[in-house]
Length: 325
Image (cartoon, rainbow, N blue to C red; front, side, top):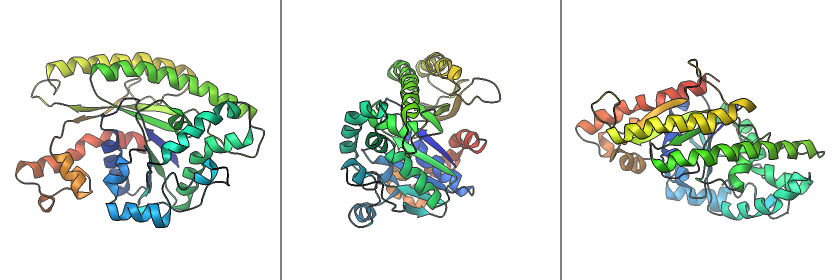
C-alpha cells in the first residue's frame, strides 16, 4: 500500500481536480483506491459526494477526517475505527471536514513536546497517519491519495510526514515558481524534525517517518496553442522557468537525502501537463464524475463531447508513474 499526497503551498493550481481524475483512472484499472480529504476547504469531498451524503457522513456515520481523530484532539481517547465512504467499486473516500482547522491549532501547540518524545503529543501528531493506515487496511486499498490544503502549516507537516510520496501540481506562473523555494526548504526542515521525533519516541506509538519522496510535478492550466510547445509564448517561458525552479529547489535539495523518485530518463520530473479545460470542469463538478466520463446527458454538446472523452490522455503519465512504484 502506497500513500501519495497531492501538495503545493500555492492554491488554485488544480490539485483536487487532478487527484480526483487520477483516483478514478486507477480504480477503473483494477486498483483499490482510497481518497483522503485533508483540506479543510473540502473541495474533494464536494466533488465526490452530493450534499445529502456529506451531511449523512457528518451527522450519522461520523467518518469525516476530523471526527475520526477528534477524541485525540480533545484528549479523550484515540482514533475512531469508522470505515471510509464508498464512492463506487474500488474507490473510497475519507470525507473532509471544516472543523479540521481546530485540530491544526492543537498540532502547533503540541509540536515542541512531540520533539521531546512526549507520548500524548506524538499521538496527536500521528493520529491522521494512523487512521489512514487503518482505513486503507480495512478496505484493502492498494493506493491512498491524500488531498492537502495550500499551505506549509502544522497539519500538512503531520499528514505529509506519513506519506510515502508526493506530487506537486503547479501552474507555470511567477508565484508558483517563487513558491518552490519555500516548499523545498520546508521539506528539508520537516525531515530533520521528524527524525528527532522518531529518535526520541520511546513509546508504543507508530509515528510518521517524515520522508515522503518527490514523484514529480504536474503543470496545470496552461492555455493550448498550435505551436511546438502547445502553449502561449508567455506561458511557455514560465514553463521553462518552472522546470529550472523544480530542479534547483526540489530535486537538488531532496535528492541528497534520498527523497526523489527519478524517471527512466533521469531527473526529468515533469509528469502530466494539463491544459485549461475551461467549461468542462463545471460540467464535471455538476455530474460528480471525471471529465472523461461526461457525456451528452451531463449537458455536453458537439465538440465538447469529443474533448471530454479525449481528456483522459492528460492524466496517464501520472497514473503510469504510480503504477510503477
